[in-house]
Image (tube, rainbow, N blue to C red; front, top):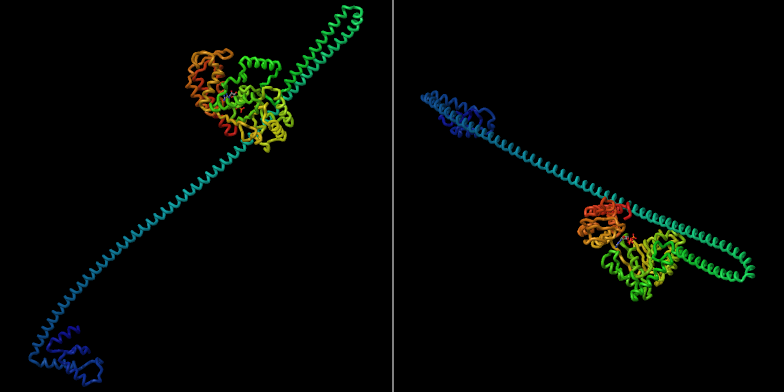
Length: 609
Ligand SMILES: Nc1ncnc2c1ncn2[C@@H]1O[C@H](COP(=O)(O)OP(=O)(O)OP(=O)(O)O)[C@@H](O)[C@H]1O
């Protein structure tokens, strides 16, 4: 309002100063007056109150106008000015309205802009939120995954630990079982040893008792016979003397009777002499029987003096009839009953030959040690060597010594004394040598056994020209070192190989089924055993026997001999006494299964192998 008034008054020729106190709003025409007024009244403070001079000048101007003839024109002009002024105001108002609407538009644009920004921000915030949530979910998943992985790893670890624990427990159990098995095995072998000892003791006692009984019986019989003879002779002498008495009387009177009496006395003397010689021979015979040491189980030394003499005479005849051959007849044969690996066989033949030559040249014999699994031919070979080299043969078992107790020493000396009776030389074979010749400081060895071993060591200390010592054992490591020191030849007898098993099968088929005695082909046709019972063999080809040899891996020579004996029994058990390849195979398979079962039981400690 004041701007409008100022503008209106500025443009108007009649300038009315406004009622305001501002000096700037004062019309320029009156400025000089004002300044002069101001100069004239310097003490009056500015705007301190209403200026009446302007009013007075306005009233003066109005009065001048009213009094002017152009008052009407002035008022028209003023009205026009006022109208113009109103138009300007309207235009200004429209301008202001336009500005206002522009401002509104700007504000709305700004609001819209802000809203858009807000929306953008919201969208950004939302997107960020989503990203954040996504990130969170991912992290959560990662954490879950990590936790799961850790859990799985722990599970795996626990499983591994558990399996290790289980494995350890299993090993511990296995070790426990093995220890138990070892313990059981030890106990079993101790029981076995004890059983063998007790059995051997019982057998030895039985034999000793039997021998004693026989000796007593024979002595009693002899005494009775001698008593009978004595009484008979006493009666005869009495009768004779009474007859002599009468006879002497008669003789003195009858010359013929005297001659007859002399003849009778001579006949009597001859009778007495014959009886005495007869008794001496009988005593020698009894002595010979009782003379064989009880430890000797088997011997080639003849029990009957006459048969010995006859065989000696026979040998002599044969010796001379073979044009001065130095060796006995047996030594000409090979080891045809024993099947061994060719190199082992050659070595044994060589040994037998060396023993023969040793004997011929009166050189000291060489002692031998045979070792290997049971049933591989150790005893057989010892017997064959004795036969081949023309020695006597005696066999004893180490297990028999322990039960003899204190008597063992005497019995060992008895054997070596008895061996001197053989004028051929003696091969003394000690089977199960480890049972009696084991390490002297072994805890299982009794004092008596130790003394017996010492006795044997004493008797074999020097190289002997009478006795070849052959020891056989399954456990060569158990022997006393002083014994092994006396051994010159150590020979191992392994289980037979496939080729040897084939030969063993053939040998025992020939032996037990008497195959070679008949027929053009080796295995075919009608055959007869020693009891002439008919055995028919069909289709038993070499291939079938070879197959059996292959299957019987791990069999000893004894097991193969028993296998063929089993076949023989089965053939006799069959209705037509026929052996065909099928029956042969069946029995072989059965025996092979039995062998494996036995091995398994032996490994578990149930049976001796
Ligand atoms: N190599 C072989 N050749 C032929 N037969 C054999 C052979 N080995 C074993 N046998 C058979 O086995 C049986 C037992 O053999 P032998 O008594 O010689 O064996 P070992 O080794 O002395 O056994 P152990 O140690 O049990 O006394 C013999 O009678 C024979 O029938």
